[in-house]
Length: 288
View 1 (tube, rainbow, N blue to C red):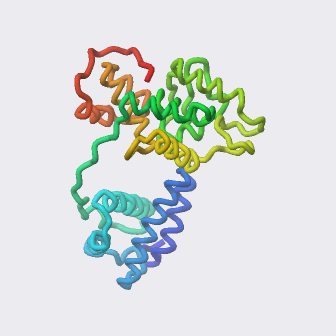
View 2: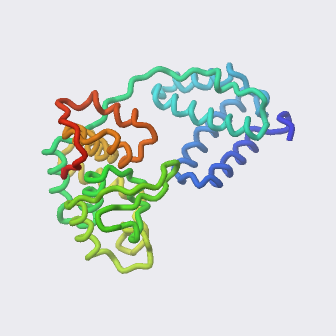
View 3: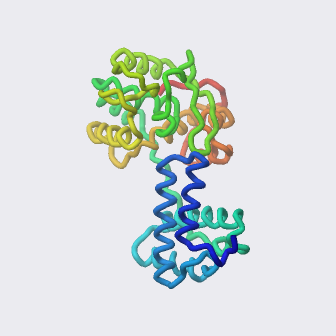
């Protein structure tokens, strides 16, 4: 198909179908969809309707508009990443010959330091959820294994393998095995005794036996953060806390990187600047 014949809206629909075919999560597909829809709406205001008409200046004007309407540099950078993914799709499919998105620079911004819960805080969170066996297990597994919330929601009963959990491929993250320590195993065992009888294979389910969805897990954990009076904390901070406290106790970065499913050890290494008094290196995981 000649690039001059490809309308932006049609390309957007093909891009969405492509993402679905790659089995990206619904959240990822929706996020990309909103970002590209916002871009195309702007371009249509500029009287640009076909993929070949868009220039570097058009994309920079879009980012400038986002800046002017109050978007943070971090959000704008993420939207540029979405744009580049869209344009990579167009280039691979030969809808364009040149990629203008590569000529646009990311805005500069500093990453906020990770929120690391103190032992007093995560014990308070644990105590707040103690009477809710399901949420206690959810919190304990996130805290004691460092897995992502999407990976937790995707866990199946058959993924419990003695002293490990099999973490299924999630988005672009590969399958791996994660150690289950004593507190995590005990919390999981307690939950399974009261888990509703259902044909659903996922470990964490609702009272009606349906999958416990990511957004509902997130909302429930945030509720327990409030009950425990833990300020400015989010679900992913449980993962940050797992990493930081293990580094503090000297656990090997290579080992942690594999457990966390980091593609690059540099991702794990960035925590070093936030951890004081790193212990002597070892391979012994701790119980938080």
